[in-house]
Length: 394
Ligand SMILES: [Zn+2]
Image 1 (cartoon, rainbow, N blue to C red):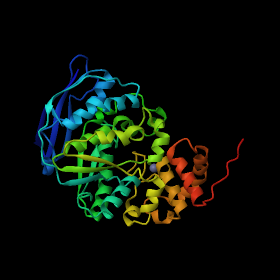
Image 2 (cartoon, rainbow, N blue to C red):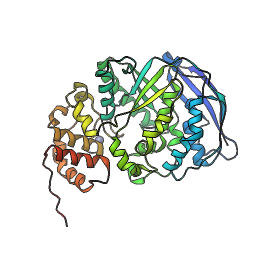
Image 3 (tube, protein in one colour):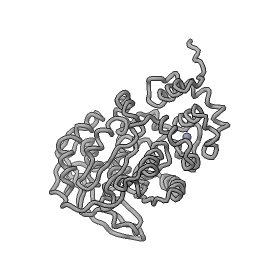
Image 4 (cartoon, helix red, strand yellow):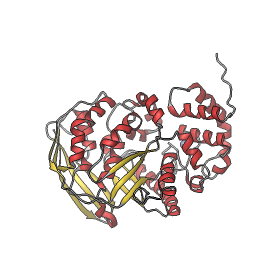
């Protein structure tokens, strides 16, 4: 059995922490951490919901199913979340990874009703998906019930491994860039740091060719559960949250099995997230109505995008675009097709791309139909009568 207990909130040295114990009762815990916690600047510690274990359910459930241990939450959770876990979510997890098995899920009770918060949130990474969501639901939205009024950045695994000291440094570098963009937009940015990636990044079985080059992708497997959990932790303040997905509906239909046991977002986020809700918090999957190339086309003339666009997978630099990783290259090729490369000279080395682009275009054509992004760039080139190099078949 895995037990989650002793939920508490406390402030120490300017930081407020929401914390609970995690205890393996029948087998030895393979993890160094004995607690799960979320941490914010004490100035906004009141945003933490400390009357519910909702933020402490999703990752422990995944761990319980992975280690084949029943899960006991020694306290209250949202009744809606409980019902969705009871009936639906474990089946989705089992479909995602063959390493998972159904387990008993026990809670002591249900959280009492509380008023909804005032914040309509979205993440800010200054990537194409994030900027597209902000463009649609802040710049172009007038209904205050749906217009973004706060941005969030979570340190829950997508910036590197928990134990690695450079993770915090990289998170800070990303924060520094994002806060400048948010300031220009006139929106506040709230950050949450947690230790969920001390658990999620230890789960074995990632596709190794990606891990070797981009170790932080270990977070992709179950790491997004960490982001949903960070949002849950702030339920006192957040009532609605736009979650940017990088794939279109059509691509998810076509390529979801490509993400099996590798990335939950591509595999099942579209139907998982509508189940990850509570009585006072709504998560909305945004962005699937577009392909990535269409999002970039939509925001390409926006000055915020031209100044701050950041798509890079490389976590060893100062949070700028390397220009050579798969995400930098796919973005540059789309900008080239749009005739907008020079507008992005502040955030990319355009000359370097011109040297590398031939090989990348060949690569895209050779991988046509095999993964979503290279396929859509080739389609986008065709739609725009953009000349592509010819492949010499051997
Ligand atoms: Zn890059």
